[in-house]
Amino acid sequence: MRNILEPLMPPYSPELSVVMNQYPTQDGYLLKLFRVFANSVRFAKKGVPNLLDKGSPLSLREREIVILRTTANNDCEYEWGVHVAVFASAARFTKEQIAATKNTNFNAPIWNEKEQLLLAVIDDLCQSGTIGQHRLAGFQQNWTKEEQLEIFALCGTYHTVSFVANGARVALEDFAVRFPET
Image (cartoon, rainbow, N blue to C red; front, side, top):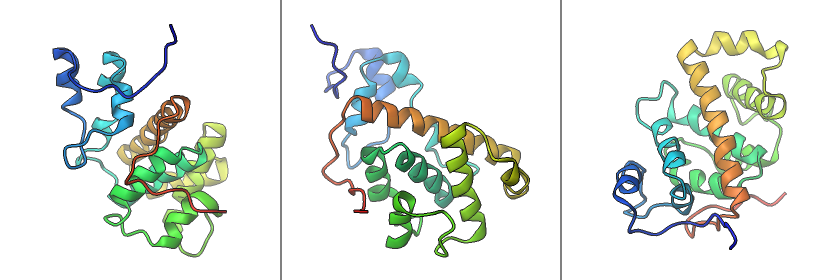
């Protein structure tokens, strides 16, 4: 018997149903990735819904910069495409900025200085697990302690999300945006 991670369909056990009802839906549709999480009640309980709440200390735009750059750095087209489709408009990203989260340098003039720093910090975290010494003071000046922790948590969580989506070979959602061509 092969142990393949696949999106599970309801009906779920009563315990799992309670957990899965906490996940956001898209017009009543539960994303394939969340249904992959359902293979483990423990994992589903520790998943991402708690970082996507309206109580985040980060603006929606900053949150999405972290998520898009992290998933792009992990070559996770599934999650990048879902976030572009669902949040890019509300975050007021231009088409150039959306493409730049995947394909270009964070110093592009389409980003303001704070956003350039955030993109560079995410690249540092993705590449080395820490923030480069030359960026640390700017990071600490621009974000509160609570926001700094949220950035770390988002980056770490979306590494995990990327690993799950890529490792389980989750098929792209029909509504998701594809990576831009390089």
